[in-house]
Length: 187
Image (tube, rainbow, N blue to C red):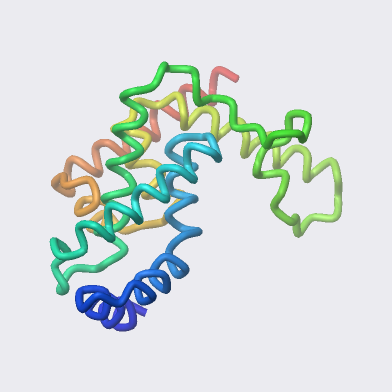
């Protein structure tokens, strides 16, 4: 896939806007999910994902073709989300309900493999609780936890995205995990 992306990037550099549309199609869901996990609000996640693609397009000439494109794009999206978190009121974004659904969140929209409604409800409540607790973490731990456990990226990729040494990334993941464990232990 990376070879296809690099080919599309070369086309974009030559002025082909359709090639960038193909890149957006390939990454839009993952970038949105990253932003949603960081912000906890679907509308803000959409805005930040769009902004990430816009900035990627505008700055495509600064992309080093030998790098992995997804790492570069995730760095843009993560930095935008961190900036957004820093500018917000602390509890403004904790409401991640889907409009018009009487309290249901996006997790409730995901098809379940379980046939037991009680199990589904418990699982949905657990995911919601974990997401709420992730949102309470300081942004430096939140970004490391989301990239590691939700996006399932390697320590090296996280290091590149956050522009931090691998050791610092490990520390932030460990401290974020410990903070989450304490937060969840109090529930």
